Image (cartoon, rainbow, N blue to C red; front, side):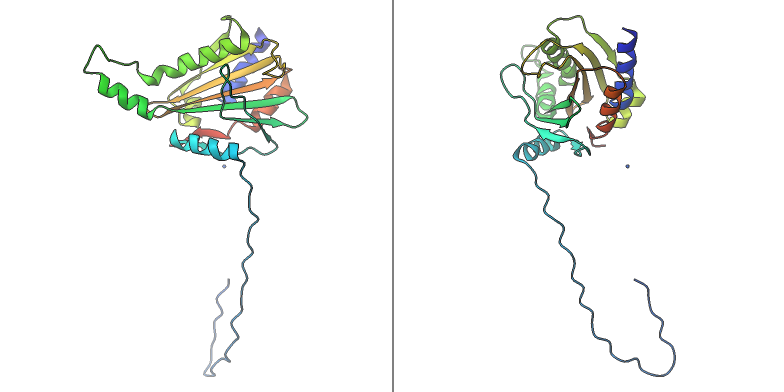
Amino acid sequence: MKLFKQILLTGILLFCIAPVLHVSGQRRPAKLKKKVVVKSIPPTVYVSPQLKNFQEIAAAANVAFVFPKGFNEIKAPDNEDLSFDYAMEIPGKEFEIWLQVKSQKENYASYIKSLGNKSTRQANPDSLYLDMGKANARAFSGDDDIFIRNIPPKYLARYNANAGRTYLLNLQDLAITKHFRYALLITLQKDHIGTILAVCFANEKGPEFFKNIDRASSCIKFKP
């Protein structure tokens, strides 16, 4: 458990960057031929349909995403049990990250409208990140015995978030999670705007897990 706490705190810290020529004298300078400069055209960067769709989802929730160096895109799971928007892996490292982003703007607008009517009053969507975290943690681990910590404000500020939690999980042996053994689940909430959920998977929870999380620690955050 002591090692679990150390890794979790690490996750919080991580989860929780042409000269001017002077001509003198009375003589008129000879007319120079205009030099034609051909600008190089940068190569076209391929954007996969999955990444394009995720960028649109992220933009709707005021979330910025920069693809981290050293990762490859993989297909994100999307079924009735687990639904994620984007997924990445470090090739050969047995390490994956799954991402889910949800805009809460429309939900918050509906919540404000419902305040005057007790019969139709809705739950404040700014607290939905709590239910999202618990539901996903339970789906991955299969029980409620989960080590949970709130992310301190000074670390939330790095991601322009107002609230967040981390969940350190012992995973069920499932095909959908590729039989990974451990996961660190992180939720980030920006009030009235949206929610980010990230799950980091690994088979070992030692220093290598720390290094791999570090490589992706700044790839996603809310816009100021």
